[in-house]
Image 1 (cartoon, rainbow over the protein chains, first blue to last red):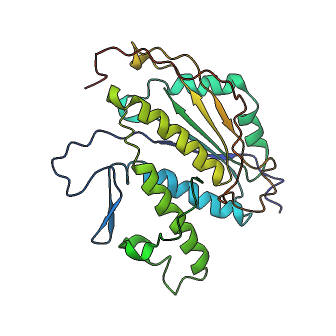
Image 2 (cartoon, rainbow over the protein chains, first blue to last red):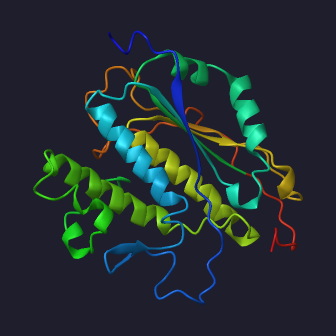
Length: 119
Length: 146
């Protein structure tokens, strides 16, 4: 079976690039400088959610390069997750109104599409 | 300056490796060099991404949030995605007034034929609208959400 010809669905990654504030208390290093310590990486957003955003993107890129990305992958990365996602619906609706890209992405195999919205 | 090209002096050997990824770069892993390369890209990109303080709850960081969105859009484009920054109107952001901004960054024109990762220098990221209006923000002294 050729998976590319039988694609009927895609994968959707809803993530966010914003972070909460980082008061100096409790930090042993600059929260906005990636720091390796004791085998771990420390920084504001490294686990929620900047690290996962890039980890998924890099993994998908690896699959894309190897032509093994069997589904369409749509990223929607928002910048308001920590404050209630007030513009999220607007971003999605406006994206649909503009048309084309989302539909196209769902009908082609191995396409990685990313939408990063800001306000 | 290319966004995703690690400088020559960069080496993950200087960075303590998290246990969760040790297996990936161990000699037992079948495709060690390829994964090591992607791991280098990931850590390098993350260090750049982290350095943008995109604190959404603070009005003083509104521009940082915008910069983070733009940076991430370029990053996705270099990873081979068709990538785009869109602006949303957010009721929670009043009294900020957002006009419009849209910068479309195109990935490979044919997603079904990706023959290389676009992380090489010299890749053109061409805005679809070169004369797009810049984000116009009318600030007030009131800080958003603390």
